[in-house]
Image (cartoon, rainbow, N blue to C red):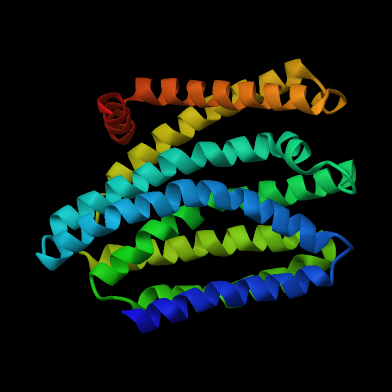
Length: 283
């Protein structure tokens, strides 16, 4: 399993290399804007996508070794729903609060308000593909547990081709934003490809369960987004405040949005959230 894993990971590095080359042909500052934005979007990917993947892999591998594909399907569907539960609200939050987040973290010294705006745009576009990027972290290991390692490799290299095509077609018009948008689009397409192939390889999984969970999560995320937008409108222009005040306001917005999301989703009784809350209470 080592060889396909290495080849699959090399596709990610090739994509980064290609995107950096494209970014260097854009206006000055594009490489930095994209790097800063991508580093921020990596945080929820690491916290949620990678963490859930690490937790789910031993369970999936155990069931796969026993040829217990019913439990493989159930565990996978639940893990994917958990990824959606954590990343979709993060997507909304990053898009709505992109500028305040960038301003508080980076707008110091030579980093200007124009840099903040450009980086925030890139962050918003990267965030669109956050759920797919994180979901792929859960899907790919399942292919390894069922000895179907060639499909993630095929998906990765197909994504490189699509990425080049999209950027080449849009970079003149959108500059660095084309690269961030292309990354999200290719991640979503790669996710759809892997999810479809895995559905066939493991004899299907509950699309109804996933769809129902996705609808509940999206509805709760929209409620959270509305509350955040109204709160931002009520607070007005935060850029005129001191850094300490901006940090405090941002913390209130994030905490309030998360609280509204959890409460809404709890009312809708998403099983994964109920389980998560139960585990936290037990600890």
